[in-house]
Image (cartoon, rainbow, N blue to C red; front, side, top):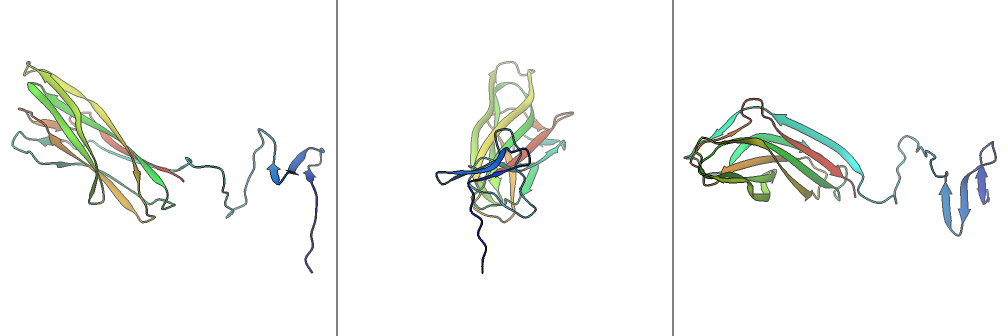
Length: 188
């Protein structure tokens, strides 16, 4: 035979309600209280947008793309992630350290790949027009993309870059410059 306890409120030893039922709504704790779930317990119904994990890596390995190279080239930057839910999204934040020696129209494009699939192209990550061929443009440029992964299998994101209308070599991660990628799993 099963036992049933029927109550409207459960109070702590001080007489404060810690669990209250009213109109089919159960309230656990009061504003400012901490509610702790036991090991292995799960919670649902709290809304999406929570952070599942944050992974990041960087590189300082110098990459030079010569004026004769018109193809997309691996930046040497990749990061893998295994999402905890197939409904999760991954926010990809990339900082690209680049050095451009000026003259005419200079710049580069970038692509983000998930495994071997090109998921987003940034046509003009950086572009500048100057008539001063000795002018140097150096900085870290940021691109971001929110990806719907659709799997709990490991995926790897990588970055490729391509020269745009440049008469000079492009240098990435030159000197003290660093490029970095951060992956943030956004839970459903």
